[in-house]
Length: 296
Image 1 (cartoon, rainbow, N blue to C red):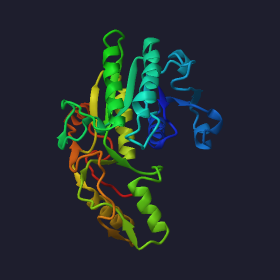
Image 2: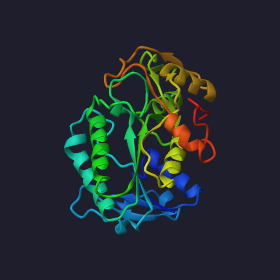
Image 3: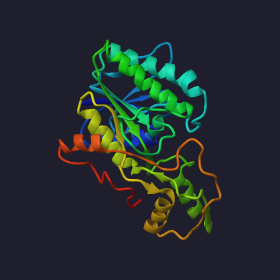
């Protein structure tokens, strides 16, 4: 199977590309500027195509090598979730790019959505819940999903809308919780400043997320919205304490130093019934699907 990937050089994309290669799929790496592509991508045998989302010369499906599937991870303007850029610039550019590929023959499209589409709703969040996004990023992602649903009424294609919850692992942004904690340890700091840590979240290792995305995309089925999550809430404090214990780090937590984020509720996590049902039909979950943490 030939699989094209946008955002392939990003945090999730690198792991998705590695998983595709492990499974023996042919891959097409879609990048804005191939001249700055890291060496690791040049040595893995992937077909590289230069694209510019939102540009006047957007590619057709054959321009990407006529892939069986596009895993679409690219999105600009993060991590500023409140920026108007998400629906003023990113949303129209994203839809134009994806719609052109679908209209010229793309059979299956798998897009990274976000748990922020659910907005400030608390508790266990299922795909049948009405989305009430409370920030610009969540609004734009939800709007793109709806646009693609309307597109599917006139152009036949399979859509996988993968709502990602929280994830961690190698290559994560330096602004992420795990990266900041690791950096504090490397600098020999005795104390790590964080929020109160009592908020409940849904975390998965990025390697497990990559396995789920690859599996769902390769099915070639019209799955629609689906949560990519563990299905089990864990407090941020417990998660950080687990990272510290598993890595043998010597650092104390300064809880309450930062306020809780204003763009997410105190307690929410994903329901994974739909994901579990699909995975079970093909032989069980990849990796440790339900594990809220694993050794790093």
